Length: 169
Image (cartoon, rainbow, N blue to C red; front, side):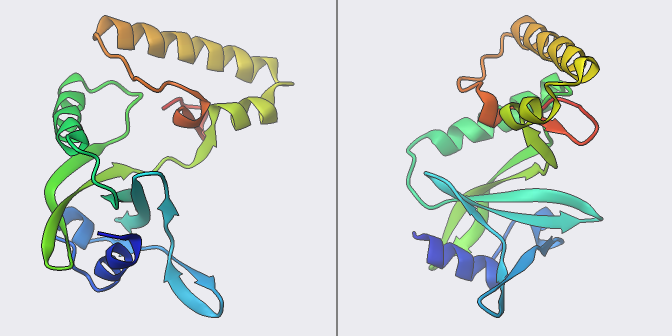
């Protein structure tokens, strides 16, 4: 499976996840044409979409990552049970998209508009109130993760978001 095939499947509506099918994928103008907005990472491609005026991320893997998909399935179920305010709504779908005649797993996650931790600090370092609130929120988050025996595994500035209301995710 490659990114071009995934984009084609999303463009042509070969999505099997019922929630995502209700959504409208966000497009941007590029080279005089409307194209699906997408973000490509090391293993996956993410498409922003909206349902009922809420923005979401639809993630498809373009690389076989072994048992990572099973990891996301377990993670999705456990995060729902724990229900901490730091995690976005997140769901794993075993057969979320049809690409080149085969069904593949996907995830969807509520989109957070805001800044990653580094950018937030760079924008607000001069505001003592915001920095104190951020520090308190971060400490509270870490304590809650610890109390629930949760280790993120990659807790770094790019994976910590602060939304437009100064809430940490």
